Image (cartoon, rainbow, N blue to C red):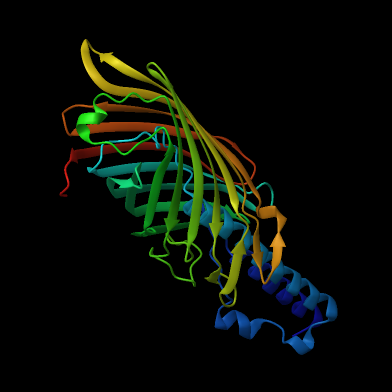
Length: 375
């Protein structure tokens, strides 16, 4: 092999490594990382035949590949962990021993904004998330409280162009189980159904704790997983004020994450940590006491949120490019159509995203509720 031919083969080898270190994420994109085939390795120059400059170039390429992977993982997994929902009237009280079963279908379509940190274009994702939830209200030292448990399942397709190469992936599996305990601290006493019929809300101050458990589908050898492989905790304070048929809700909370001991990395998984993510959520809603000539308990809400933070670190080294600043705006309509059943429809879209997911979301939920000490 001539020196000229060797350089051409080496350039081809480096170029191949650059292209095949594929990235693609979700909530939009996915990253596929491939190693050279055996035949390609046999054609590549040996380490002894490389000069110092070539070795530095390959080391730089490997470092960039790992950086891209970290950036994509953070964008994807933070979107799953925080699940920046819009939940109007989350702190409104219900009578003691109220129970409810809710079936929710959510549709997401959109992409990720990488803020120029990775060479990816046309990164999109489309996925469906059905959720089964159970709710029960209880007496917590004289205050109204409730607990909600949810188990989601997700199915989706993700695609994008990495360095000019189109990559796509399909995923289907369980997401992480979550539970939320909410307690009203002011203005929300624990009352029975008979008392509740006479009670009028004015001002409510509440607190809640949401916990996400690492029970979802997860494989450390794959970049795209529905589970996040770590615990997440969100303490939150909520305020609700009613004026006649109008209601204002405001919540502020912080997501905390434990370490992911096996985060995707090449050539082997590594531990990853993430700084807390702050969130603020606001809703302005109104009762539709007369809908189509009938008295109802229906209501409509204008919703919005904003979150920031979430810088990821690998081996204790933070990557400032992974800091997120995003917000969503949407609306919700809830319409009871019988004594025990109601339908809720919500839509939201990303209004601003400096880094992370920017999705359109349509959500439809059916709820069956009842009051009684037995489930």
